[in-house]
Image 1 (tube, rainbow, N blue to C red):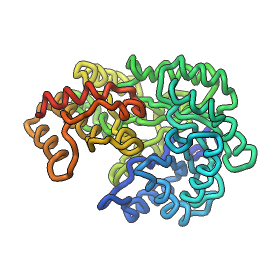
Image 2: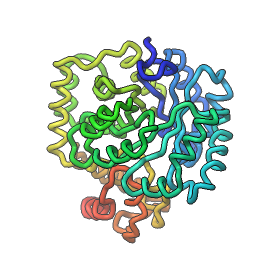
Image 3: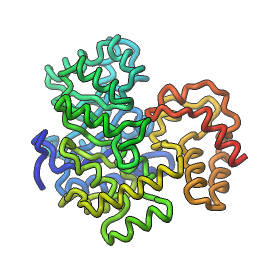
Image 4: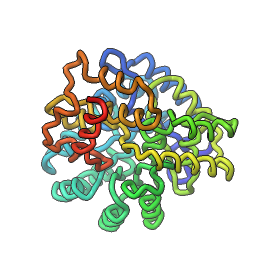
Length: 376
């Protein structure tokens, strides 16, 4: 396995995204996470990614207990992020950063990213001098590389990178469905990174699992290749572009870990036949007009819905209804709201808190009306 051509510390081009760790009774399943982390490291990979908002803070502490305490610090790389809800002024940033080091049980972060940058929260980061403060951490040796993660249009990224040429790496949402999507602009955003000569980390290569459980006609296209899993084609697609330093995968069980390792340990870019198949699958997805929710859960974990509406789960049910037309999609919707004290889609009070933190910039309030019409 070759080291990254951009960052020699990175082994291979596959990273462990820790936003969707295995859970048991509302807590991270340490036993399963340890098994997965060991398999990941044993395969030769070393890059872990987290943020404080992931799993309500449990992602960071699980990394501390299951990775940092068990491995020599030179054996793994760790990325963390500065996220909008956790600071109000420049003075808040350093104390929060020091808590992140403590939660993760490390003395430094290899990469530190300004999290989920878009045209709105970037103004807050500017006002609070977040970029300058984080770059001071780099000068002090508390982080090795300084970067951003990004969720907006290409022109916004171009503005940020023009104003902050010190950015060393950019994390973007990139997958074959979003590649030419007008709302995500994955291709155009990637091209801006190329223009500014910034290596790229890919997030959401399987679009929150949407590119794993495909509609039957799309699934058939990939099965006829007689090759890997649906997830493997999505991850290899993202890794096939020359400026990609790393593709992250948010894995929840050992089966997913082993599948991803098998696709990426001896990585080969998609060949022409595989790329053609992926484009056919993409065309099928476009025809379905599905909600492009990635189940990041920012809308309910970083900014709790006052009505307790489980927004990502409801969108998943509606997408399943549209893609598969199964009778039981309504049953799953009922399970979301029954016996858990969660609100119905129709009980949305239109406060808009969810829309302000949505990386996909979805019109959630309007989409919940569609959910209610379909299932209620």
